[in-house]
Length: 105
Ligand SMILES: NC(=O)c1ccc[n+]([C@@H]2O[C@H](COP(=O)([O-])OP(=O)(O)OC[C@H]3O[C@@H](n4cnc5c(N)ncnc54)[C@H](OP(=O)(O)O)[C@@H]3O)[C@@H](O)[C@H]2O)c1
Image (cartoon, rainbow, N blue to C red; front, side, top):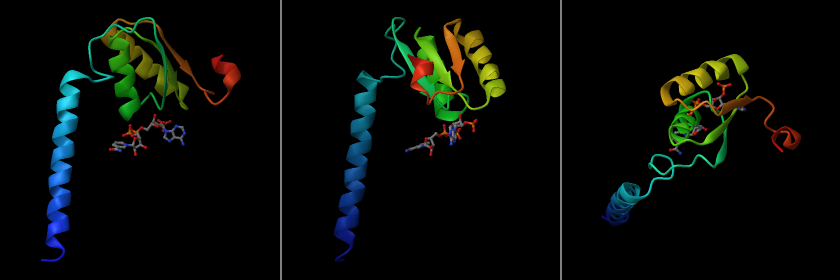
């Protein structure tokens, strides 16, 4: 019984936090909303797979200039073409050595 109350409280807390996040996302989602961001340039690391790829696609749909940070240029190029095909946004470049400031600025 001593341990049940904290675990029930943490479940309630997790449920409240989940609902809160869902409600916030209904009104404001920095990646998926429709606002035009064509004046912005976004650098995305790990952009050839997973969350990075998904983020690159969504932001390209909204018109941003995308710099894809990728280790594997061949794989990166495939994904770059895929994003251009899907979004019509051609302002997408790949950068391999993204750790060097001289490359970016
Ligand atoms: N907190 C959460 O709820 C949550 C949920 C999901 C994911 N994550 C985290 O978010 C990150 C991305 O997840 P994901 O599902 O998108 O992963 P993923 O599909 O494996 O993609 C990882 C990307 O990062 C690159 N990468 C991996 N190791 C690297 C390194 N040492 N140096 C440079 N680039 C590297 C990969 O490049 P290559 O293709 O060249 O390997 C790939 O582009 C992971 O760290 C994951 O643990 C957190």
